[in-house]
Image (cartoon, rainbow, N blue to C red; front, side, top):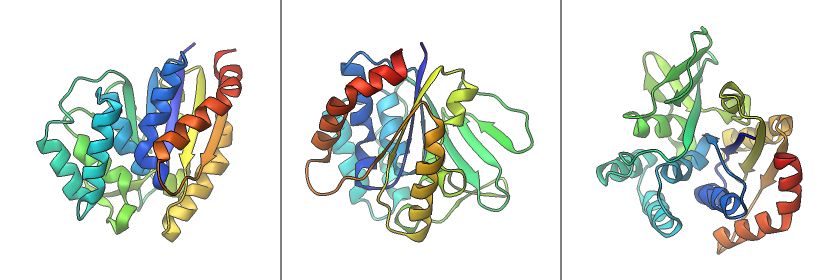
Length: 232
């Protein structure tokens, strides 16, 4: 059974989305592919390149402390964090704010459709994340080839369809809601609505301290449902 996991959201829990994936693996739920957008795309990409829990927590603290998302991404790039070999397939989804054309950064998917472009992820990691992050911390859309690329969720909600393109047989959607801007609130709403088309969807809103532990507790409390929906 091929299992795909879609992460979205810019709330506080999004910076620890990798913890959710780690907890699935600890409980023998293999993740064959991730699809991500919004702030959740950053830890998803680092996790897909083999970063461990402690290292990833330090990296996300470093990223969050940067003056702008772009500066944080450049710092991670200079540290070589995007050059590690992939240990899990990943698709980073964004959308052209002007036309609604979907752009997916992936090394395994392909498309010739006029309204769906697939670009290579390897070698384009900072650009892919910059696209998916807008409007996180008021960042502007990323301009590429005449397109103004931003968070996929702002227009289409949960980014689970790249997982269907890749042939995933079961799909779990997790939205880490809590963004404060009007665009982020709209994205959270769309993710909650469209995520219900996955086999299982959770809308998580965490605040306060020790968010990784709250995510671990949530997975532990819902593991029976996860097994039922994804494995049987």
